[in-house]
Structures are given as structure tokens and as C-alpha cells.
Amino acid sequence: MELPRIFTIRERNHRIHNPFTPEKFATLGAALRLPAGSTVLDLASGSGEMLCTWAREHGFTGTGVDISTLFTEQARARAVELGVADRVAFVHDDAAGYVSDQPVDLAACVGATWIGGGVPGTVELLTRSLRPGGMMLVGEPYWRRAVPDEETARACLASGSADFLLLPELIEQFGDLGCDVVEMVLADQDSWDRYQAAQWLTMRRWLDANPDDEMAGEIRIELTVEPARYARYQREYLGWGVFALMRR
Ligand code: SAH
Image 1 (tube, rainbow, N blue to C red):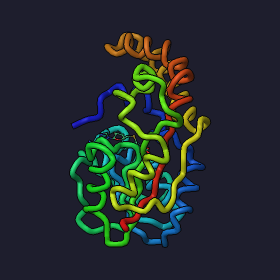
Image 2: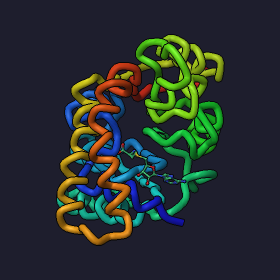
Image 3: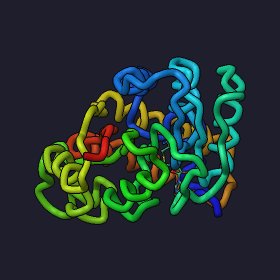
């Protein structure tokens, strides 16, 4: 059980493994208007930046679950650094099927809906950990504008155009699943750059330090083609946002 190494090579220096900035996470945390002491379950918590900063800013307590050993270690170190290690815990585990022992006030899956087999399954999974009347957070890509063809969709790292919806359709899908969308904070092209462009320098530095690694050839190719691919396709067509949901 481990995240494939390619991700930790690209994203080892990221605190946020999504097209979100610290400011956007701060905006979202305040927008939820939850009281101090609120309990959180964060599935696919990555390096724990959301949980740790919200524990510090809003007095939340909670648990993060992630399959990456490196990211989980980084999350634990971040909790110590921010002085919230007594309020948050990070578990190295598969989040697929993970249900908390006690119902929580806020159940989140921010940028990993494959753990539930898609948005409907992830909403269902989060609901199983949620107290009645609690709030869910789902982070998910959407098409900023319709892709002209399947080649463009694949160049956005989707398997096809059907992988994602347009923003109004994604919002309607949450409604069809029996949820009110009660808040949202969306990525923008600049916050996408903080996620994607930051990987280029990380890859370049890794290549310089690890020229003989078995993955050096793959990373070399990726660094060569990735910036233009991203600028041509993903930056133009792919949106991303975090949606706060409450069951109707
Ligand atoms: N929510 C975090 C991380 C999002 S990136 C943030 O916003 O920064 C996606 C995360 O999903 C990665 O940290 C990866 O390690 C994790 N992941 C992928 N498959 C998983 C699984 N089956 N169970 C738990 N975590 C998983």
C-alpha cells in the first residue's frame, strides 16, 4: 500500500497537493462558519496542510488518512510545526472504505474522489462518517469550457471528456445526489500554476541530484514536455474546486 513513487518525486516539496493556495484554503476554512472544536475526517489528507492550518485558525480537531508514507510523515511534522499535534492525527492507510469510529462534523475528500469510485461513491463514503446535519467537502475537477475533442481531454490527463462535467453540471450532480451545495471555493489559473509549475523546479532539482536513478529518464522527458502541455491544455480547460455539501 503506497502511492506510486512518481508522485512523491514531483510533489515532495508541496504542502498542498492540489491547485489551491494557502489563501484559498484559508478562505474556505472561514467560509464554512464552523465552531471551534468541530471534528473533521479528511480522506486523502496528503501533507495535512488543510487540517493543520484549520486546527490552528479555527480550533478544529481531526484525523487525516493518506496512502503516502512520505506525505503522512510531512503532515505529522507540519502539525508539530504549527503547534496542533494534540488536535490532529494522521493515519497511513487506504482511505477507500474508511469510516470514522465517531461521527464527525466535517467529512472531506479534497482531490481524490477515486477512493469512492467517483463523486457519487465518495459522497456516499463521506456520509457514513458524518453526523446528521454535518457538512461534507468534495474537491473535484471540472471543465472550465467544453473540450473540443477527446485528444484535448486526454491532454488534460483525463481518460476522456466524460471524466469531468462543466461547473453547473457538477453542481447539479451534487443536487441529484441529495445534497445542497452550501459553499464553494474555486481554483484559478494562478493557483493551478502554484500546483503544476512548482513541480517543474522540484523535478529539475531532483534530476540534478539523482541523474542515475531508474526514473531519471522518465522525469527528464516529463520535464521537457510538461510545461507546454500544461499551458496549452490543462491551464485552459481544467477547473477545480472544493464544494461544501449538506444533505437535504
Ligand atoms: N487533500 C490533499 C491531497 C490531495 S492529492 C491536499 O489537498 O493537499 C491526492 C492524495 O490522495 C495524495 O496525498 C495521495 O497520497 C492520496 N491517495 C491516493 N490514493 C489514496 C487512497 N487509496 N487512500 C488514501 N489516500 C490516497
